[in-house]
Length: 500
Image (cartoon, rainbow, N blue to C red; front, top):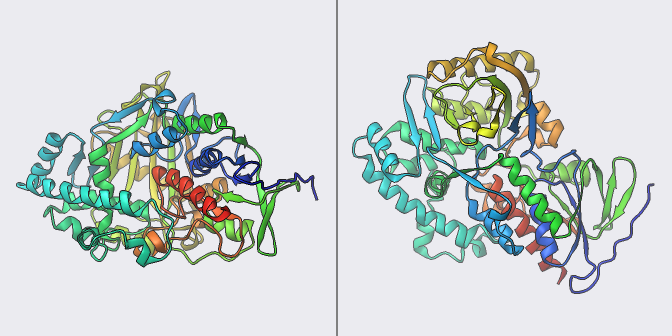
């Protein structure tokens, strides 16, 4: 047994100590809120850098964000800094990305989204004459859904469905459209299949499909249209660095390259953590930013709830000679068989033959992503979970996927020859799982099906082990950078309610 560090839990928040496992944005957010509540906090990160999946990679001097490539809901991050008496703008500059996303189909069809209402209205009218009126109705309805979601639902630690929804009026309950699919909800406003497919594609990253996810999730495209998409100057990792800096300034201790191998607990109470080298740290409270099922099964030796997880991904990082012409910051390529693609992704047992995928060229928004005649191009392909992909030849599959991506880029006039790729890094679901401890290789955490959202989502505390808490994408409120930051806040509220 390694050296022990005794941690005493004092009164009134003075002397209370907590250990945080993982320095993703959920863990860093939890650390900041714990410090604000008077706790002494130590964060242990297995990797050499903070950020978790939102990390950084450099090839030939060209910088890449490894995970998310755009930022939505900037107010979440502004509120995080304001809670600490700071201003986000003191640490970071946000660059608007507009037009935000271009969708492309195999027959040459395309649709570009924008927060500029006139530009957006013109695009929708081009695909569906008369769609401008539907757009106005959609925005008004989704705005109300958004208000209900974030003012009355998301920011609460409540597992009782009746109490969870009790804050809503009868009219607001009707507005949630929880009994109607996202696809059907979009169909109330638009006849164009292309508009419905574009706005419904957000379901891809929630572990479901627009044909099964609740209509409430029309708030996803609405949120990006109404509040815009942003790129922190220097990339998403610049945001991670800003939040890490804030956490350190608040007094949180952060140790990288320090892997926790076990969460210690005795008689139903957390006792601390054991590290890979055998050393142990005593702590009456442990907050894990590792994926919730992995935390329970691999670290705490506890059973995990049966969860439907969001997809795995294959990611390509290319340092490309020059810059691909006509390629905006964010381009999503949708297949011709839209509904079949979702079935294959969520229930299939092989890498899709004609996958949906997106390509990011961030130097369209921030020139620092191009260096010495090379530019960063990132491609992400959602694929089924690892447990359904037994026996996959990843070398052959990545070669096939690479050619598919390059071919579709050429077809839309934004392509480049494979010879232009000066250096490449590819992460399959196996690499993602091994690097970040992702359950089943799931890239985005637990899915957002009706039975895994709100009061039905895994709570942010253990019912079996007192003092063990969770933060991140697989607990409440959900997946995505803003949600995991809010998760850290909710987790600390839960801790505070338990220690009073």
